[in-house]
Length: 484
Ligand code: NDP
Ligand code: BG6
Image 1 (tube, protein in one colour):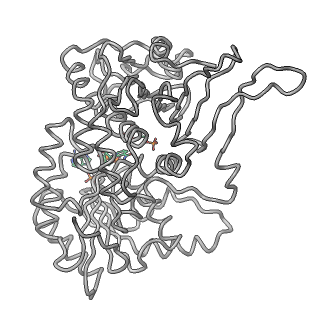
Image 2 (cartoon, rainbow, N blue to C red; image 1 turned 180 degrees about the horizontal axis):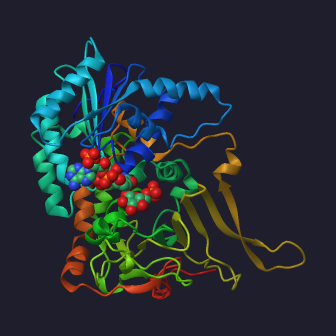
Image 3 (cartoon, rainbow, N blue to C red; image 1 turned 135 degrees about the vertical axis):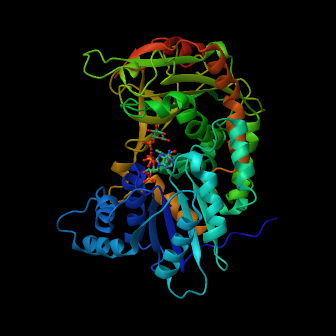
């Protein structure tokens, strides 16, 4: 058994690679500031943004704090922000040059000053083709002689099973598995973390969590914006690599897994892997692929109207895919993973639909559903029948509604990246993907990727701002979902 990973509490540095990028300004630095403000980061933390772009120090600070919003009269937070700014510097360098990384190391040494140990967290918010060169240089030039190292790697981890394995084989000689933190930011979301609690703290749920009670499970991702400007990346990625293989498969594994031996990273990830090993793709002919076209009013462009998209591309921007978990608990229950860009709303949810009532007393009873709304407006609600109030004996479908913002009025929910960075410093890998999880996830979608590559199926059109391709209705019906 490997020894537990020690948390980093002091003598800490973090280097954010790709610090000139979008993610850095929109998510990374706001998340780091939020952790700092709440006293969750080591007070001696040195933060270095690293990228190739020439950026003046002041401009860098301006850039990374532009998405941090503070009330005008909140002087305490304003003061914290000034402190935070002093913790952050920018270092310009390449992603493969020895000189650049020696320079980075010197910059770190200078900023860290005398320390008994140097605990360094390296966060690669970079395109995947430079993961290996950056990791190699880090190991050679910046790896602490005394102290802990953590390598946080953004998605995508590979393009398919072979490339994920290849990437891992190149990281193997550089960093140990317990030093590598592979991000799937969905694992940092409050309601995704909540799945374990909902399932294993509540006998009323755990006793029903099986094929005897559950008819079908839907995991749905909808985004109201298209791929505008990202068409180049998206066209090879497709909705399957961009969303399904990672975020939705991770959620599936948490729903399907057997109770883990403990909540420790090893046990939790073992349970997820076991579930994924039992999971298989349904029939390819049942998969629905869609591609968005202009909105009804013509104001929003179709996928193919984007200049960055290859002409005539058949890239799916929508998919609805059936999976099955072949074990005693789930035999025959479809897990329907639906994901789409340019949809009517932005929403991510898990919808567990239960089997119909079998006592025959009520012909017009509705299905029970447990809905876990991951975003926006986090909620858990349970749809159930009651007697229609008043002089009536009809069943009425209503819900027990736990909408977080109503129930927890003064509580601030964290951003996914806050939780993940916090865990990375704490040395808790339970919400990061282990390599075998990713291998399972790639294997699971492998036949689908191959089919898309070889057959190039024509995706069904759906209007920008709609609910997806019309075929969706038949798809859901086929797998037993009943609209009430
Ligand atoms: P960017 O495309 O903005 O890239 C980040 C930085 O990487 C850029 O500022 C640039 O810095 C450098 N860069 C860009 N292209 C190349 C290249 N071809 N070779 C080397 N360096 C390059 O990405 P984001 O900031 O949006 O995201 C960072 C990474 O995180 C992405 O690669 C993506 O894989 C992942 N991501 C994850 C998301 C998530 O939600 N988990 C969401 C979005 C992205 P410079 O030129 O100054 O060195
Ligand atoms: C990223 C995808 O992983 O997740 C993006 O690459 C997508 O295409 C994003 O927009 C969605 O994340 P969130 O947290 O906004 O649901």
